[in-house]
Image 1 (tube, rainbow, N blue to C red):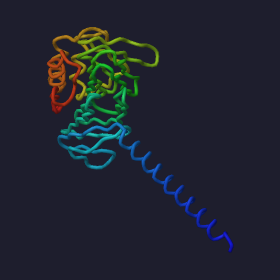
Image 2 (cartoon, helix red, strand yellow):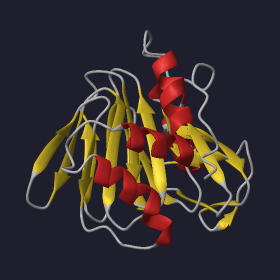
Image 3 (tube, rainbow, N blue to C red):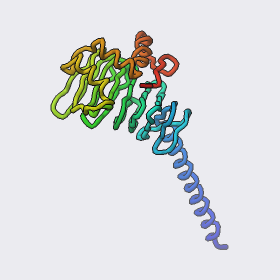
Image 4 (cartoon, rainbow, N blue to C red):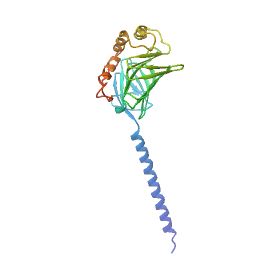
Length: 244
């Protein structure tokens, strides 16, 4: 009696088992990769789009997502233990975050990025970048509404890198790089800049008042209230909707 049918069945059985195992391994690997991918929760006020589509609160946001707010809009990306990113009105930003760094590319408007100890911050603009190394809890306001880039620190230290220099920004100070565009929408920042000319000095009373009027004061107050803790989760810091 020939053994060929038996041998063929064995070969087919082994082949089928290998195929099933390979498929299971592929599915498991893909699932784990998706599960481990860093994501944030989006909260919106007014008109906001996510990757070009209308966004709603509760949407999941991944790295490389683009968030854009309207004239009376605002958005908060809560990244849990990694911190949060708050976007003011008329702001567009391509987000970037991993297990160790949060930030992104700020195209227009204003963003406040808050991170606890152990998480770095990196925000790029057309003029350069604002970075914090994560050695301490940090909260940075990056504003490009007037054409140039202004970086203010309400907590922790950071560095601002431009094409030809590097400047340090301590808590309570601000730095401006690039050329400011003159116009009515920039009156607020022009007045603040005149009071603290030099770019690297401390915030004057006029500058602080301007930030509060812009809605950033809410973020500063919330972060200072949490100054005894590195936890910058949404439950401990309440940031305003950046209404001008």
